[in-house]
Length: 596
Ligand code: ADP
Image 1: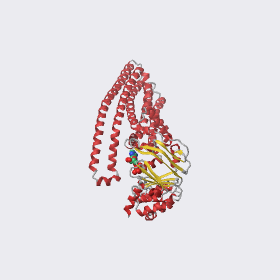
Image 2: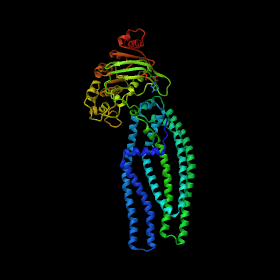
Image 3: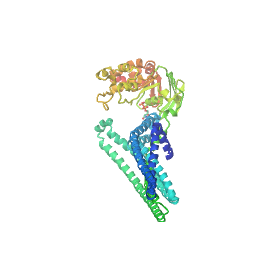
Image 4: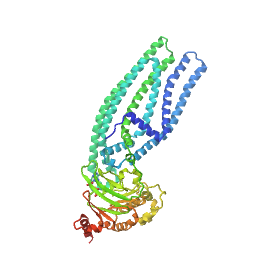
């Protein structure tokens, strides 16, 4: 389960990530905060000299110098502040987006199995939520800058105040300590509330997304699901409001106490400075300049303490928001999990050795003692009833999951021992729930930026039977898939999309190719065409086909029959047809009857 990081560790990670994305930005940020701290201190100290000069010697040259310094430094700070603001306004969204990019890269490189884990799904959602809804990263940068700025100003002011009364400073710092403790209490309860709210929020988000999603609108309308969805959304909304009310009550209490102490702090510092300065002044122990400086310092100290406290509170909250992001960024990548031997293809042999598999969070064994072996270039048809475990077997071969016991050997070595990327380069698969992107057709097939493909895209288009469709499109293979981002984009039928997906799998120069019900959306003619061509298209690649159309098995070298998670048979079509009572023969004949 989740690792709780302390705030210092989170800040370190934050700095490391910011440093990686934009080092010059961090330097400027620190420089800016120190400078603006300097401005406050200058404005407290410099007037003292000016006033002392005015009430003392009144020497014009020195008067001019102090006056000039005050005006000059303020002009400089004002200019510098604006210059920095402009710079930051440009940099802030950049750094923020860079962080979002890091998050995206992380999600794409995490072990696939995490997608089955509700804890991880929550985490991912929360991490993204912090960016999209709370602009947490941007606020965090601003908050840190403010904290540094107020902090450095306070140090300067404290030094001035110490010269007046060390005891006062100790009392004030004590009060500040209490304020910080209150803040900590508040952030703890905030975190607890956050933990309570997150699972509710995830479910709430799911229903809202369904209500918004284009994909769902057909089903929502056909089955009149609007009321049901609306009710769920309202239900979770009420749940969240209840939780928030609890938090705001606590917040009210702590913030009230905080304000009271803050006021006490102001009263103590004003009162003390006022009293001291007046008695000193009447006793002629202090100049008018010092009087002004201490009053100024007390006013600034008080204002800065409040701002500092608020910055700490805000930062605590933001760190809370960014918690999930930080935790996610710390998870090991797929590659790191399995640092292995480089896999130099091609695939020569595949051996399943007593493989058992149960999905995470489930009790049922989906694969039981699965053993078979396949040689280079063989075309294997995998058949069986729905839910028998065919797709699962393929997912294991693609290393999306790991068997609980038994091994899968490719070229004589457990696939888990291979370096992840090098293994993946040799595997191409079209799953039932394959996805295409709103990129051009060429990009969807080559998975490379437009224009970088090796020129085989066009050939594959004709081999999978998409040439006619391409002729309809003025921009040909450069046409964008879908109309969301380009009016000239094209919508394709299920069958055409499947052909694009098959072309993508073929384009990848992998020595093993897997098609999981690749032809379910194809019409019988297109299917026959794909099958007739496929052995030629797949060439020397080792291939697995999962198909409910038994006729496809006839083209294959061998048929792997899976029954309730076990290998029922593994032989040629002709052999299996000879077995009177075999599952394969029953399936084959049942389907053949439909065509008679
Ligand atoms: P087939 O491809 O033969 O139709 P699958 O391999 O998809 O069958 O599924 C085999 C069994 O595993 C089914 O009982 C299914 O309910 C279960 N199953 C599939 N995916 C998951 C999952 N992600 N989590 C838990 N159970 C799953």
